[in-house]
Length: 431
Image (cartoon, rainbow, N blue to C red; front, side, top):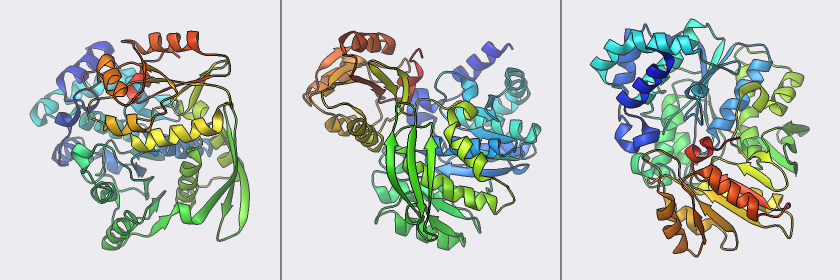
């Protein structure tokens, strides 16, 4: 098969969560274990870092990858979903997986796949493990796909586990309370393996503590260790001071990931980095600072308050659930000029809690409803109807780029256009 035929096989033959939703989700690790066993357990042949959480796990994973890469380590990175190119999911030192490897892997495992019947996520994750093992990476950052306890990635034995935060998302699979969701995310905590919690609440902290005690895993809470102050938001950068509370030492950091919410991820990254360093990975302050200021360049990350145009400002953000949209609204409050207007180009998938998201959005903003071209996407006209019931008014567009063009035509030069609501919608933007 050619590369294009191989991708078509993956998309057409294997259940894919981003397209069909919960029907593609497997509720045990049987397929993953079977695939890895048949391939001589590639996941056991490199060191790893495991990252879970409701929001921020992608940014956190990319920041950690940038730091290790800049420090001279051959660094694998597995994330999902991709925005535009399938190969975004699997990278080494910021370079996407080779097309030839994908073709060869799918051909080699085709008979095995037909016997095991894995999901798209299960097979492509094992592809990543095989690629990292074959290329002999020094370390790989592995982002969970969904949840943690039953996530296909949860067969690795990392040097550190990271849980960014807990919020409401995928409730149809993970549970509809924070306790249930925290229990699923805490499932990545491994015996005798340190875990870093980025953010906790009175509800979620006891669940993390109980799981860590059960596993005899040292547990650390980043929000208790670092304080953030003097945050400055620039068009394409964020500058802030970070104080190590115990040592009373303050450092200034510049991030090219310029969403204000990245300060929370930064705390998590810095604590995880200290544990990684204790595991034999030498990272200098200069390497750390450079990497955090050049995450996009080093890893190829985009879509996190990603400013792609000025006058008017157009920002892309993959926020797609209640907590994510709250962070976007906080960013807008800090970002926009006093007399400027906000234009939302928004689309969502049908299995999200759409009513909760719409209830958060400001009625005075201008709206351009759109949809990604996947089966899970809610039709733009239907989303428009739901929004109208919340007094949010706007027009519908089948193509997100048409929606953006309409917003540009109506916006003044000081206005802000934000594209959000769905990872897949952002993925269809022509940048």
